[in-house]
Image (cartoon, rainbow, N blue to C red):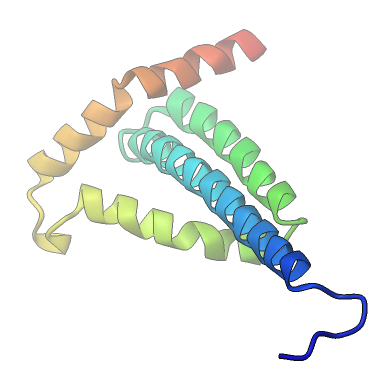
Length: 133
């Protein structure tokens, strides 16, 4: 194998390793941010469906903060790109609330939404929003 002048195979391996490491770090950041968006999305859905305005507003503010981090992490994006990113998360949350679609018993959905509403995470969002005011 002929080497190009001034290049070594070891520098190519180092560059490739750096790229793999960077991709891994970005993936790890994305996973924790995705799980945080799922958690705050549950609070938002609970607040919205149960007409808990305090929870809905607190979760909405936290969601905006997290989505701003996501945009910053990927050098900014448009609102439509952000919504495109959030669409699968929203779909997953809807599937959790209505696993059988329109056939899902209302009791199942209400029980799950109340569980989310009363979670320590959602209650923490409310407390946090009240401290900010």
